[in-house]
Image (cartoon, rainbow, N blue to C red; front, side, top):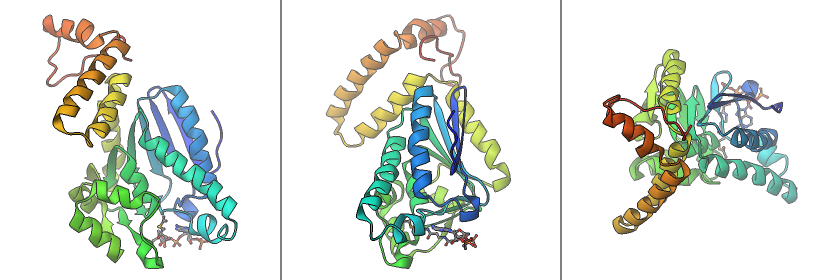
Length: 272
Ligand code: ACO
């Protein structure tokens, strides 16, 4: 496994864990952190994990872009800025398209680009006490680089516009109410809740998890009849790629009344 300065990476079994590791800078994303994430995703993709968990060391999840290293310092070096953006938007796009289910464990501050990250992840478990905000307007810009997209896709319009134009902060508990976080729990319960969520994913098939996500994202832009066609085509693709695991093993087991699919997950044989 590679070693990285700005993040800690561990891959064990079905789960990859990434900790942003710039606590003294509240885990704001430096050019090095962006490069580290880009390279770490090569390792994570090669390991074919089912779940990726991202969190922050110290009191912060992510305080957004490193305003000095990503904007101030390279401002008069357009080529350098373009290179920084290549890695930044590159890994954001890759994590959004990841076949693994992505989880954000929002342990503390979550500002600007940190909200963009939370917004592209599939599941967010937030500490009630975590502090969120779209602070861009506070220094004269709007939430850019995909951040407004994540606001539009995770919050309703009234809340999205309000928090974009006011820069007002809100808590993890509110983030759950707005739909930006999947769950919010007291900070003391954050690890346990996240592990519970992970446990409900790793007992599923790897290919079915990836295709479930892919179908969800694509179907959002379709009408009903298109969706039926697309879903059926992907259904048979899944069936073939898993050697018909769902019917040959799982439903065969159901026929023997060995498990109840409503409340239990069958341990697949081919889709592992
Ligand atoms: N970029 C660069 N440095 C940062 C950032 C950032 N986004 N966030 C924190 N830091 C640095 C601070 O400047 C400080 O550096 P120093 O020790 O050299 O003085 C260090 O991290 C610790 O930060 P403090 O402000 O001392 O920590 P505190 O816990 O009091 O406050 C808070 C935390 C509220 C997150 C504050 O640091 C802050 O407002 N950060 C900026 C948040 C933000 O607006 N991010 C940009 C979003 S927009 C975008 O991502 C495009």
